[in-house]
Length: 495
Image (cartoon, rainbow, N blue to C red; front, top):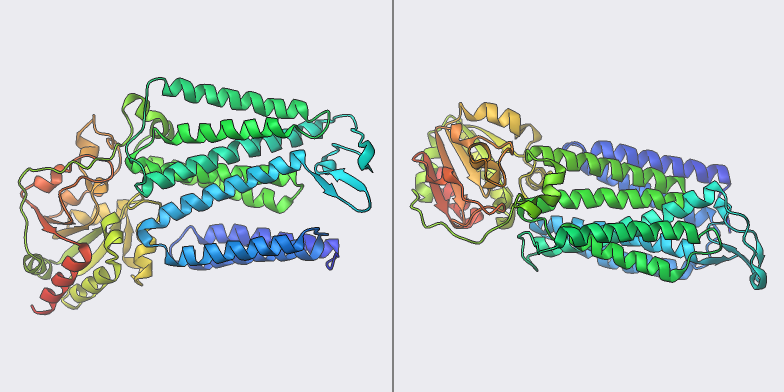
């Protein structure tokens, strides 16, 4: 039963679309990210309510059951996930979104929606695909240009949605270390990938051709989906190490595009708006992350075929380094005038964000100026460090982006690196053969002294050794970041 007039429904969709746009704007800054997230969620809830109140839904109970099951799984998963596993969660959510869009498009291309007593209208009738007819005598009307556009949109959704799903599953497995984080390459890999893409495009074209006669053959769509799943796997396997988060961002853009395309298939403007926003923002973010690494997106995605992808490594250096105790580091910090803290993935692993905030508070009571230097790709996803420190209520004005932080490092007495490695590795500037060569870094070596908090001498996610660890001005404090920072704080309080 339609409880809302068409005008009210349209207005509800418009308000939801505005919420999505404002949410995206809010997410562009750590100061407004929480409000932006809530605003986007409110828009999604409003859109769902409008659908329930303005459309004739034949399967309300199964829909409500599916929503309840999804909520029961999603809410605990989101609340319990560790900050170190947030990229994996993002990858899974992204993959599920792509799969959902692909399934919906496939059902719309092949399915039939019951509209009463023995009468049926095939799913894409809104685009002029079919005429109303009794079930015993469905009659196809001549194909029009809108027919081909709708079929192309559906084929695109199935193809790219399946790629996004399987690719996201592989990124999840890499980040969760269920498989090697190193690039997986094999002889003939590029040819197999290129051939799979070509076959997928041919099958997608076949969907469009097949659509002019009647509903699309389910077997053709199944074959298209299977080929697309293989393309997604082959697309991500050659990517390794620090490049994986960039691929997650790109796959997120893919999912957005599939949602936009499914919006055309379903004749739903709101899906078009939401999908376009996700696709555009994901694309921009991917380009920004690639730029932050000083490399092109193409080299990140396909560099492993010629040895250019970051590789990940478990090899531990046995070269001598200078280490110190927590008490020694506390004395060094206490007599400094300016300290720049560079957080990294190790800070997230140790869940030491609250401890580092306490350390800064103690230093400030001693008259030490402290700022945080934030690299755009520190951690395992964009904004990882911003979110982590915001969780500990670190003031936003203390967070300095890379360029501003670099201008402060030359005049700082101590650069305290907590769990970061690749984003401060001078090999990005000095070693042309390095996989991170050309990536802008935080120049912590410009500080008078550098202190690294590390669990071990294991290299960073890119799998290369950091020569800065062996410089005479560098001191290492080994151990879990939370434990060692707690000891430093206790020593500071006693000085």
